[in-house]
Picture (cartoon, rainbow, N blue to C red):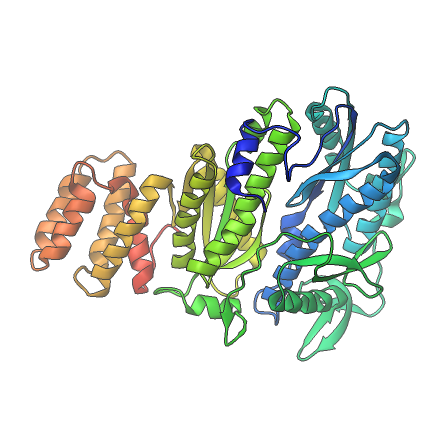
Length: 508
């Protein structure tokens, strides 16, 4: 990866082509964009508690990244005679650029139909890939034309396989099985094999094995192989060290007894109540940020590479150095999803925000949503809750996080996290009782309802119930009753302390 400072300068228009390490963009040509849909539900299918669920999550995330590279490779092959080459690839998206050709759109339509047919057959509509192409003659990316075509494509996913001319192909909507059953690994209906005490489908067995390989090896690339686990358009690929193209993914994995930690292992490391934290992160206003680049290819490339590096290599380094018990489900492009002990997830979110600000020169922000989960609650359900916390709560303010029932800007969150840890320590030493913390939550609810009596009632509680605990009394006064207090964030602070002690806060 290029130095983030170089990528930032490219994004900001301070560097221009030609430049060492930068891809070329012609004055005139044909641009092709590819974009995956359905990634989240595909990756989250593994059932918690099933053997190897964490391995299958890792394998499915890798599979999406690898398929993106493979589709880009197929586009390069389809346009090889006009010099096609990948301009950038990040997350589930890529751009390929080629010289102008008279049948560019016809080739693209044929490739789209082939992809629709293949993905429907292999993944039963869980994953769809959309292609768009547009000519340009001004040395700039044809952003409006690509967006318009992608928008139309996303309104009719898999249409190349589900329609023939103007008619539907009803038989493509149905799947029949002989001897199929419910897979213990993904809950899908498939032909099954007994593996130990579980009945697993072919995909879960393949993903389990691929996940084990990803745990043993890092920095893998792709090579064609007759029995490879990755399949696209009738060809198979295997992942090996030194393969090309290399897949950029987060390699860190939390371990337990030298094996990949299970979600039960991670929940056992939670402070107080054994909850997992599901953390979703998404960069703010990225569409607007790209829209300000005047379709200048090198600036688009610089921003894309910078964002992808933040949510892969920067995350990988941060997890390895400071948060070894946090499990990365997927990261890349401009978003991230991780699972870990709830307190570690909160600390990681704060640390990554500081890294992100430094790398982007404090010019971009991200928002985050956290959901709490018991160790065997379904990953997809809790991911949806974290997504709701992100998009309904944190994104409404942006540059914010929603966690433990509260939405805060990041500067307030960092202070609230510190205060919550201190309050948890006081609670753990029994300097302040759970009943008082629940009273604070009740008064905070009154405050939200515009009841101005909360201040005097809290002062009374402190005077009456913390008279013999001067350290706790002073702390509560400073944290919640002083002019510059964290009272608006008191619900988060108190819930943190209750969770850390093993109590259960209301409202989550």
